[in-house]
Image (cartoon, rainbow, N blue to C red; front, side, top):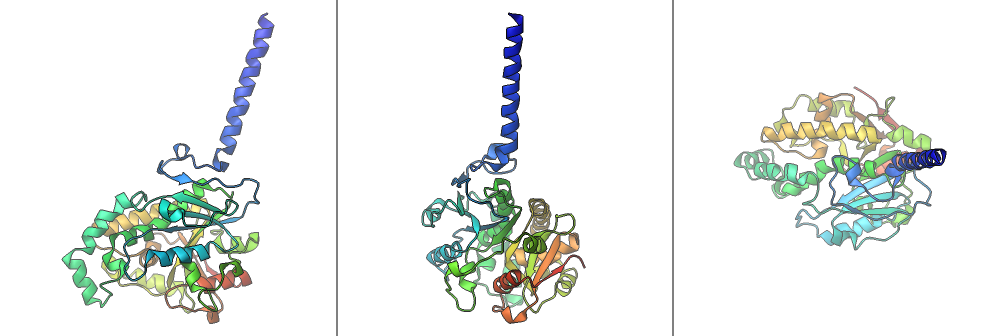
Amino acid sequence: MNWVRLRILFAVIAFVTLGMFLFIYNWDKSPFFTPAEKPDVLTSYIMTPVDRQEKKRSITLVTGLWDVGRNERPMTHYINWLKDTLGMDAKFIVFTDKATNAQLPVDKNKIVTVDMSLEDHPYYARYYERNKVILESTKYKKSVEADHLDNKSARTTLPGYNVIMWGKAKVLEIAAEMNPFESEYFVWVDAGLSRFWWPAKGDAATNVRWPSNDPEVLKNAFGGGVNGDRITITMQSGHKWKDTATQACTLPYSGLFVGIPGIAGGIIGGTKKAIRRFRGLQEKFVDDMLATGVTATDEQIRPAMNCVDKTIFRVMSASTPRFAYSSAYGFLDVHRSILDGKIEIEEAL
């Protein structure tokens, strides 16, 4: 009788041990977001399930869209641009409010949506009011006027704008934790990416195969260096990172919001390790900057962040200047260069 009980006990222990092993091994691959198991992530996000039988992709594109009150462009324009962007041959995780998500294409094989309002954004509580105080201050308004900046632009008038610009880092980190497509690389692309496609604006998204899924091409573009812990940022054609970063290191915080030419903010990414490291450095930089009464966009602070840690970035630029099509964005030249394999990488200064 004792032997029978012992055998039953061993069987129960084995069953429980196996179950715990399978749970620990697979929880990170679950198609459902389980924030309780992932620290520092809001618990209110709702994620759409993804077909687990679909072939995994080496890279996941991450984007987000929130209404921050821009008057010059209706939200409907951004939603339409986002729909076109989602037409690309790529896997996506999309962060936006529930109402906007309801208007997006439903394709569980390639698009995962996460309900996140602007107020639920992890950086809203952290930065919105602090940024608002600065934008409304007399000192800041005088600086905008003195430097001949647009006093009606989103970055100089709307507190939520910088929240979502800085928030790219945090949203990337959340996406990397979710990882529904079992990817190695996670790259932010702006929701309105499609409006900059070449040769003509409005090209059908289905004609744009970006990014490549070739492991070697992706490793070159987003591999993060020897240790895999550098974040890849992009430069516009015709600009050199060394010149931009050197200039940034000579400026005080108050000089950053004027803008340093060359940085393209619409594409940024890397490995999970690189994203976590980048997010931590950026949070400290923004906290320190805001404490001095200065605010600046994500593009404007990246060269200055390099002054704090010269091992944080890999800088990708196109080697074919003829693909430069816009003075404000580096989408196309980088996109074409990735496909052609013509990518220049600067590891360090």
